[in-house]
Length: 220
Image (cartoon, rainbow, N blue to C red; front, side, top):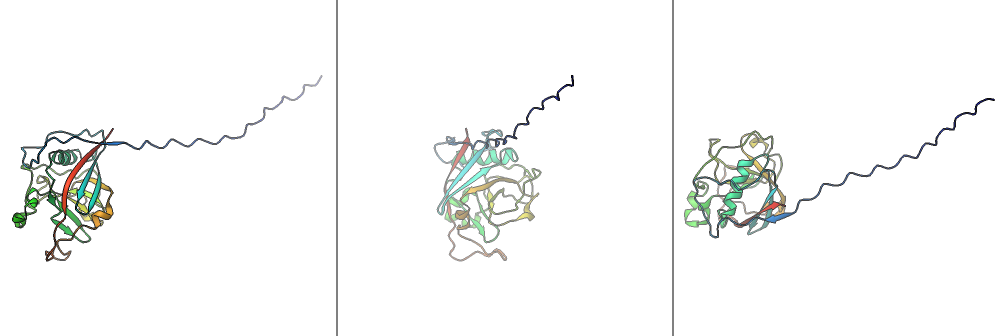
């Protein structure tokens, strides 16, 4: 007797692939201050950050808040320094003493709390210096990039920082990038300009905006 052909199993219809779950959005909580009063001079910055965690800084300014994501993995020394100073109230009451249209807004000089010292604004620091982290591959390629200010030497970083108001890629590889504005870019752009772009001539009557306080947040 001839054999009947084997029955072929029916192919099942292809099933849709479930989408990959979205990465969880980190929850941020405030970090407690290290000092109850403002401290402005130190021998060095104590280690207070964990590069495995995510940090943010909220600059409460006279124009509104600016929230920065800090790059603790790519620039661990600069981020730890900024967080350490902020947690000691170092930046409270300081000013964005150098703001240039189409370039950047610079702050972080402890002397800028005192109008009587205006001629010296831009020369102050925390009492120590540290080396720039310029090999992390990050660039000043857009507005809102946070960098460390310094003098001619790579070893001259202290407390002063700047935030770009426009792309400034010519600074890339020479200055430390250690964060980015994630909220408040419009506030940043409203900061009072203190000098002209050409020749950096002071703008008469310009009153620099205050950094009233800095709050540090960390991911849970």
